[in-house]
Length: 201
Image 1 (cartoon, rainbow, N blue to C red):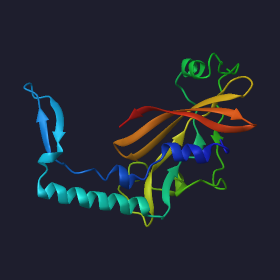
Image 2 (cartoon, rainbow, N blue to C red):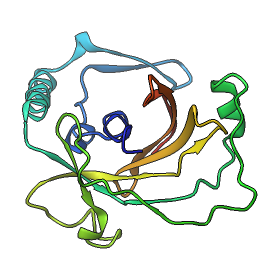
Image 3 (cartoon, rainbow, N blue to C red):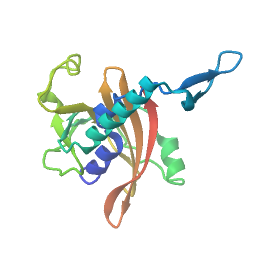
Image 4 (tube, rainbow, N blue to C red):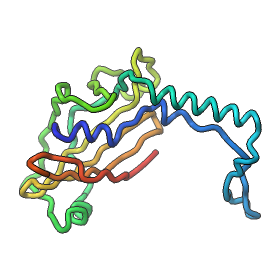
């Protein structure tokens, strides 16, 4: 987990300001005779819509150029994945099998993440330093808070050449996305092999 954490964060976390900076309506919506949407004719955009699009592009550019750190709340407690991922594991790694323990693994794993250097502009902050989950989104912060990320425990094959885990990122009460991450060992280092979206809200 220590080796792949920077790649995991880059692959699954976002700048919440970009996600919630919705593009404006631009043009005339075209529907078929049954009322189903077909397309939008952008040549029919009004002057007001053109101005709003320019403002949106400017705001998007400002966010993208902002070099301040994007703070992500992180729960260092790594949960056991209750979902059966054996088929996905075998399919992606061409017949490799997940190693199963003889008895259920109920140990609690804590990731010491604070000394792991991340790429780009994300920074992790222990979720215990934030208000409770029901108030985390309503609280105003003096930093750029962007969301909450949590990981499930990695499931390996017997020889620990391949692994699979699930990651969830929430950007608001009803905003988030999930991923299935496939990892493998290459030149004696763990790398992310594939990031597969599993849900979106």
